[in-house]
Image (cartoon, rainbow, N blue to C red; front, side):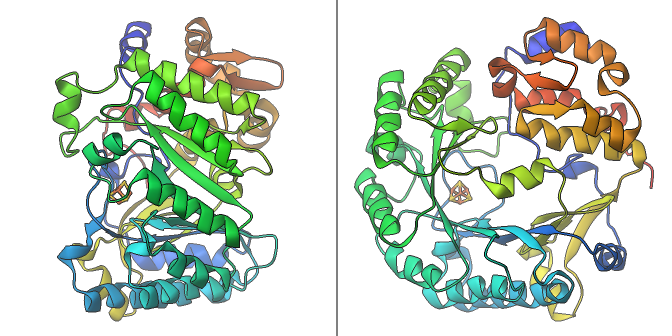
Length: 429
Ligand code: SF4
């Protein structure tokens, strides 16, 4: 990446952060047996991601894989959950007591009927989690949330993440969210009665948000005093997102306004005693273990349609529902759609891309893993990022500046290998 390109990129919104390297578009069909073999030989700790694909409706800002409830019958949804349970059984024996963090996400897990949701939570029981394991579930703040919280209370789930997005009804309405501020406050209250570790998810850069309305939203969050807060800047890079047109028409907060909102949130959270661990995550009691393990390139078991996994040198993705996910599980196959075996060079790039999520790269750790000094290895890039005020370099670490943290996803792209940047199938197998 040359200097001019970087300067142009800094004029655009940074985009969503990479939790898979390289981008799935460059992956190819892969024999599931190779992946099963890797898992069998991977005796260490791992994290577990369970993807329930159903949502009440499509949010205006969502670019993720999700399936509206109305497109599948309850019977079909039950079938999907049973497939996830079956898929889990393929892994559970190898990883009993070895799972360090769980995230049950999606989609919207509580879009399922309570019985199917209960079956989904049974998946984690198969892994015999110990008391140190952080097990988180993402819930949508709908009026019957307590039925789901009650189910969670009797499982190993010990952290609840509620998708709030904003405490402003007008913002929620134009984003086609199916809840109001009052639902969100009620959901928080009910969750607090049962759980001591709560995360609230907010999003900035949405239509109708102003700096003033955003400040009010942050103040409400601080009054609620959750243990964790996630602040995601909205990213609208492709036409498939329904707010794409609004972005093109200038109806959404501009990039400088978004950065101002993010700075305001950061400052307020910091003043209230929260510590920032990544571009989006803040904690006041203990950091989000799942996120920290992702940044450490921990092996990631992926269950459910289109879930993305990582094992040793392979990154891979499951089939979607319409690609035969349930059929593959029925045939006793791992339902894997595509993946990539990374050579040593690509593993190095992958390690950096994940590590950047934690806002710094320890030089000694890189040296120990790859036998080189990262500053020498990427001297031109490091010089350029320093010059642009995105990083600082010490003898021990490369540290992202606040501006660099906001642009984490751009920094990740800067450290992609040349073949990956060019989106060539140049990754060797
Ligand atoms: S609830 Fe989440 S996954 Fe579902 S449509 Fe909204 S943003 Fe997308």
